[in-house]
Length: 503
Image (cartoon, rainbow, N blue to C red; front, side, top):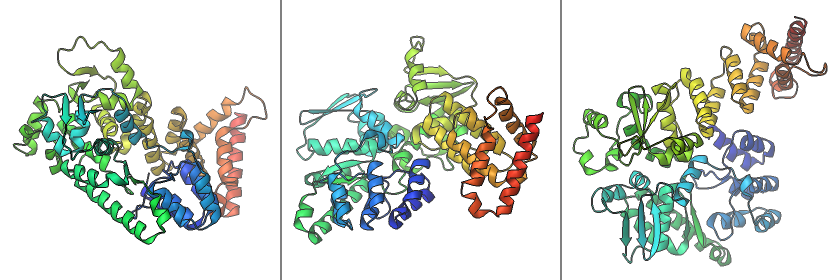
């Protein structure tokens, strides 16, 4: 989600602009539960400003307003009209189909709920919690240290400390995996202590701020309203990338050293060293890490991708969890030939620079993609079944359209079945039709569409011409164009289509 789109989302909810709200949620895939710097959601502003249609729409799209939660009670108390309050009270269920999900967070939720590749079990007062050493180590310096010292050879760890409650430990694991928690009010003190114990100080500070807001709300609002709140929802703040950035250190270790600079401008920040075992932090100089990288595989890695002479060390947890292609690849390949703990996969027909981008995206859900590599990254995103990377490429391509690459981009949109990008290209062509009308690439695209309908009914129309005409007639373009210019463009396009049909 771009900062611009999120800002628009909140503005539309304050002003009651339902038309543009629908467009940005459905076309731009904006999360309706995103939070601003005041920890408020779009639904809260829609309720506060009394926009009933917007409230109804946001609820249909999965806006969270559960009873007995701080967000739910806050929306209910702030609702400007009785109709909105009744709507919130009557809205009992949210269909899974209508919730706009964050694929990256959903991946970690699956990691938490499923037992695949879990390699450690905590028993807290008789209750078992299975987890991944990798995830716990990356997210918490405390776990990273314990797994390389006291807990190094232990797969089953028993915690009997009376100060660590079962529910608080469950919340801790939930936060480590997903950056989110649903905290019962009575567990606030316990989870704060546990977060600080695990050196998760920012999270602990946020819980303290939430507690202060709750106490202020309880002191200033009717007793009946505040007494209804039993759960506080811990969610990432607007533009938070903490979860994504946590895995950048592991990514830097897995990528060959000379390829790292394409994704990371600064090598090995201090937090990276905090998360590594003690034997790896003796010398923090980059050249020492380079020597280590060339001789040792990263911690907990279990797969090695071989591309020519380059080795990329990774974790099946991530590649299988984020790509059905790699999941099937690991399942069907014979692993008996490897004599090490790493499953070696030889990848052909892909450049190391392209795989570096894919590797980085798998772990962090973002990547730096040079203009000249977007096409190749898109190709392998489709091949490796990485839909979120495909969407990422789509957004980049939309922002880089010009009269020189528009035809090539449209071909890619059609080849990889990206209708949103295809329509965006058609709108761009309509806006710049006078500049591209004589471009051989544009004429060739239109000619191919004309040829595709020759053997069909005479009433069939030319797809590309239809799309351009649509944006000239009914899109936003007539409002920003001179009517005479629109008519001239329509005539130019019609003349070109007629000429191609007669060829």
